[in-house]
Every structure is written in structure tokens, then in C-alpha cells.
Image (tube, rainbow, N blue to C red; front, side, top):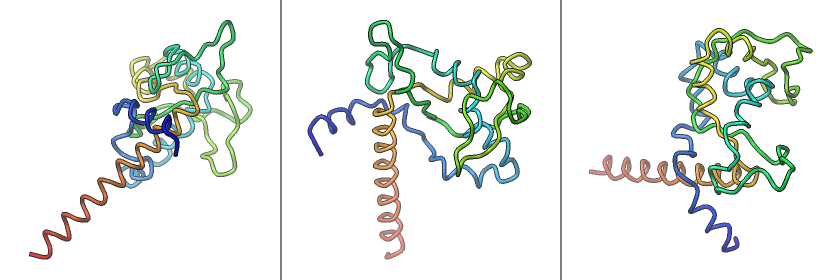
Amino acid sequence: MNKSFFQKKKRIPLFLVPKMRKRHVPPIYKDHETAWKLFAEGALRNKIFHDAVINRGNKCLACSRSFITGKIKRFPHIEKHHHCYIRLCIGHILPEGSGDIYREAGNAEFPHVPDCRQCKANSPEYFEECIKKIFPVHRSCHGYIHLVEKMLFDRLGTMFRNNFVQATSK
């Protein structure tokens, strides 16, 4: 890989890297799978939630560069990044065709979208805590964050495995 890739990777703040990977959370919430998926996947497709996340700031927290170039906002190149997946949605599911749906679900995506407008009105503190779990970042930076996440979890897994082998061989 090129030199700029490694330089950029080193600058990514560790608070952006999830402490628990998304794939490790479902067993924790096995009795609340729908509420968890509404937050982890469905909320990202809600227009109210999307706009609140995108409007959190005008700089990418991963690279400190602006999202705005001149007078043009470059929202298509901005991703919504979870730095924490441990949250349950307390809202209701929006009906299909609702105007609050930012985009429809893809093939393998959770099909439901929560009613974030109602949550924002009835439980503003809870809504704000959901927003705090997700940051707007550049699309390219989002990939770097998850690459660092993979590297850290792979290193942690190797360390645990080595410690286990060492402890059991005594």
C-alpha cells in the first residue's frame, strides 16, 4: 500500500473505532433483535435521523477536512459511521411509503425504519443519545476507520489466542 494510506490510518482518532464490532452485538440483544436492528440499521435510513447526523458538524472527525467545498455541500460523499452499536431503538416502525424514509432498504438490509420524528418529539434526550453514537465522516475515511477496527480486533484476537495457548501449556 502507498505511504499516504499509512499516514492517514495513523491519524484516525481511536474514539471513532467501535469498542465492540457490529457482528458481536446480536447475541447480547437476542431478545430485542428488532429494537437493536432499528437503531443499528433502520435509523440510518430515516430522513430526520440522517439530517441530524449529517448536520452535527462540517468537518470529518477522521481527517479533520471540511465536508463543504466552496458553496457546494458534498453530502453524497459523506457516510454515517457508528462508533457504538450498543443501543436499542424505543420508537415505532414507520409504514412503507412514509415521507420520513430517506432511502429504501437494499437486498440484505433490515427492511424497517423507525419513526425518529416521533422519538425526537416525545423523547428528545433519547434521540440525542442515538445521534451521539454516529458521526458523519468522508466515505474514504469510513473505510479507513473499519480497516483500523479490523486490524485492532485481529491483533487482539491473536493476543488472546497466544495467551490462551501459553496458559494451557503450563
